[in-house]
Image 1: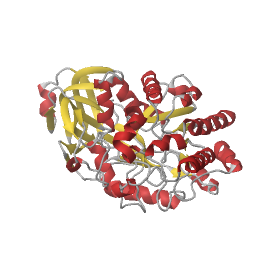
Image 2: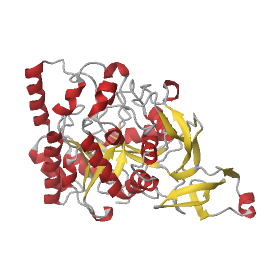
Image 3: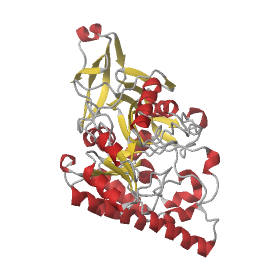
Image 4: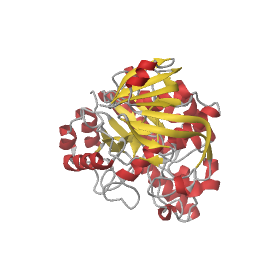
Length: 448
């Protein structure tokens, strides 16, 4: 079993920074220490890498991606998007079930796991999707090997919109797992759409998107879900919060005490509705990007810990599918390769500290989902590590975009931090622009 030493590193971990070194033996961290390694230790290691003061953090855990396999592989595949992930310092991902066919059976769920084992350089997990008629399946899942149930309260692929009140109650009361929700009120969205079409016609520009998928549509749906979760004691996780008003529904208490948790995505922390005029459909997501005021409130909530984690909702489409108007262009875009760089840019802008970024993207996802031995740089934990060159510029260009769709809303932007190297289970899967396609990733285990 090989032993690797990374030294002369600024290690950011567990709310502090130390200058020190890390020893990994095979897939496991064996030592984390401040200072310089001894000559005896260096000679005892198979590889000793001087990172020359670079920042080392735990691997990022992204709890919401859409890698499009099976059925939508013209846009993305597990292999291509996992490679983009490790290039961005994301060492573990949790994929959503709205594929074709949707992941709403045990057979479809395990087929995804088998595929990831063959091709993924990142660690992987897959949500199972809820429908109006698969409750028995949801109750049969092994939730030590699956992160939870994805519940769409707004329209989605296939038959995954759960709108039957009796079914919703039974899911909230009978499924022994975390329920992750896409929270937008479908009836209100439809009324908004009909209103704006009746007034302005059906060729609406993208600036109408946050008016149709409005703040009220988000708040109304989230309020209903939170009330149900509190009534029934459900373990509820609210995905991609996008409004200031929804924050009123969250509890300001330690993560370990929460039954209702939340996520915000990097695009809602970076863009505002002012950016539609510049980027158009490239930043069309569901839920929609909203106002400066909403963005500011979300940033404050991440900084304070009111919102628990930061993720991406990475959802690639072909550029051709992003054409059209507010009603016809696809919603979603690729973000997993640049999410950590985006957050580090906000560190440089004094919006967050780097300790907050590590907490929201590494530590807290591991704690929230009870992931076995990941999310921290600790002895006995898996060696999922990211080496970052702070202050080294990186310009997003078409030739360095690794998502299969081939574009990014950040194309042309120069970040001021570069992901130098990524390790997954002790294997170097990314190094200075080159991805090692070896399937080094492992199935995430959840200590529920």
